[in-house]
Image 1 (cartoon, rainbow, N blue to C red):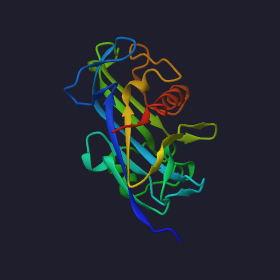
Image 2: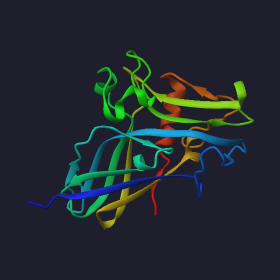
Image 3: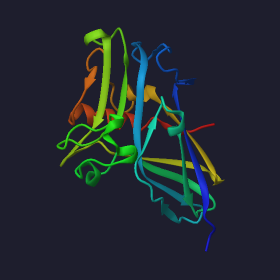
Length: 216
């Protein structure tokens, strides 16, 4: 039987090629809209690794909250017996059972600010900041994506291929520019607010599902 070892998954937040600087960094998206970032966090769940022999293992972990403002949350340590990993997969968001199962503890504790109501459940991902292009009070933009109801599910699967033989540590970059310009062009000047499940939340989820890549 293969030996169990600790896999380290580390997330880093970037804006294009630049490391994210909360509050102080000044950036522009692909539409030349200026913005700064006050918050960015998301749930990672259903982590799966695939080995060189095609064996896949789902790692038994509760959803983990990855928060750009919390250094400790950027590293996930988890046990696996897959010795040579060729792909890592995970979901952004929490599943329907968790969303409809009421209040939970740990990283799902409502005190962390990622829970709406008993009807709509958890926020899968949040991106919040300020932009002169955002026609909202104080030029703030807030994109809270999540909640669940039949036919409207913002959970997205991410699949990242790895160099043959990867083990022990995987570095994953999250490029926030993709929130604006993945499959859907989303302008701060037109839609600075998202606070409920629906078409805009689904488009934002499609976009940020593309923000992940393997990096150093």
